[in-house]
Length: 383
Ligand SMILES: [Fe+2]
Image 1 (cartoon, rainbow, N blue to C red):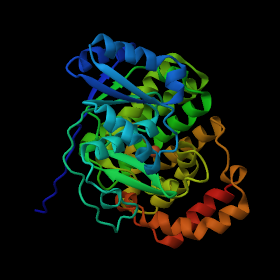
Image 2: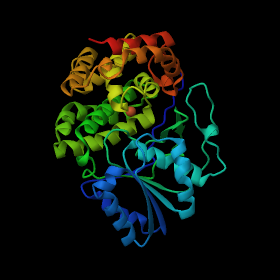
Image 3: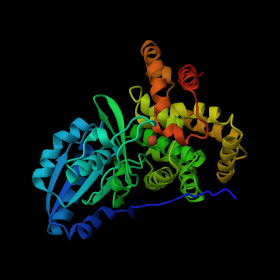
Image 4: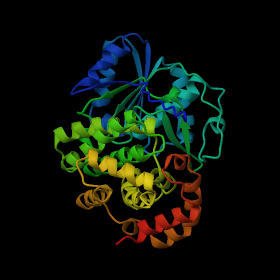
């Protein structure tokens, strides 16, 4: 008998529900100094002030760094590290979209382990062998204000350095708590709700067909995908209940890909990040990737299984429904948002880089550089 062993885990304790932000008071009561990293919109909507109030009432000193950029970079992490070191927090809180949480994860690494060098632990290619991230001690609380990235439960942080996107991956940086308060995503602009919601679907489907999928990650993927098909259009329109359910679905998809990982659509969108926002680009590339993966018998069966779980006939219907959702939500064609000349000029390098992306290892089939290039072209010239 061939031995097959899989694992499934979740480090993060999840707290959810309307007003659950107030749980900060209880969690922070055993700490003296708390550092918050927050996005501009979280400050604008008053949630930063509310969080600071809970922490002050718990008797802890709080320092906030606001305006954390939506384009997380190591350079920015280096810029704010001295402030973190000077304040010397015992707990770090990130309130904002996935990028704010990703920045907080990196701050935690270099705050707890100042002797660690970014180049040693960060990687951008599946052929690199980074050093493991050392044991870290400062707890991290993630409070997402958007519903998509899954960073509130994942052990991954994506950061740019000198314009190149690097990954940090370790259970050490997975948040200790995630607070899912649906009052936060209610304030998302329509476009952010759409793009991040479409990303949830790509997370769910890629995690389901991934080589690392297990029956446990499947459960999370199915529920998340079901929620997107049923409720994303309503959520985009601003329906509060749909937004709440989408907020939880985003974290479910996060749990699915934390364990089951992702695939070719994410590899291609990470390396093509200059073209469009992450979720939107994923939504554009994903149907072509699905079609490509379906050439493989095993992958086709997995798509079919997922389709049936979602109450659809087969993998063809699943693909049609994914395309239909894009249309319904007015996802543009790639050629409508990217200039052709620039696209063609960058195509070869981008395809090469995507081939090296660590997520290719989990895609049901390994594509060649040429095949990746063809997929980018297909997405670009799609009718
Ligand atoms: Fe994503």
